[in-house]
Image (cartoon, rainbow, N blue to C red):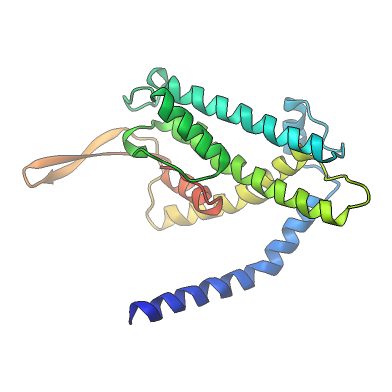
Length: 233
């Protein structure tokens, strides 16, 4: 098979897959963001962050929510990387340098996929799962929420109400990204992807030397990495 034919078939397969997923997934997402009911776990999250999910927001309030959440996310991820050397599960890796830590934090929060390091050689389990993987979820959820708010802006041009940012963020994470990622992670594990928290270990001798690998929650990270179009290491 020629490379051109392979590329055309791959493109056609993608178009068909998107066409098949459009209606059920689109209808489900519309139902998620228009529902008046809140799941119990969502109510717990709203209570813990002090948000009222039923309050309608105009664009200035919605924008403040997006910027405030993003700013806190950058700060948290930056600090997590800076203290990595003292965290359990760091695999012996040192804390990330200030410039690298800020670049990584800003990149993951902005969902811009910029990585200038080798994840398996720089980040321990805590930073990978508690920092980067979390941002893979919430940064994608923020992007979806902004897109949904834009649609509401056109549909509600006379009222100016865009919904509630905190409700959109939580619902996108809990009802859309998390379930799909769980299924994707299970499929990846079934196909042989790594999913553990083991440390660095030797895997054999090669040409007179040895090679060291470290474990990690690869399957769960790859699932949301591909779904949320973000990096992950």
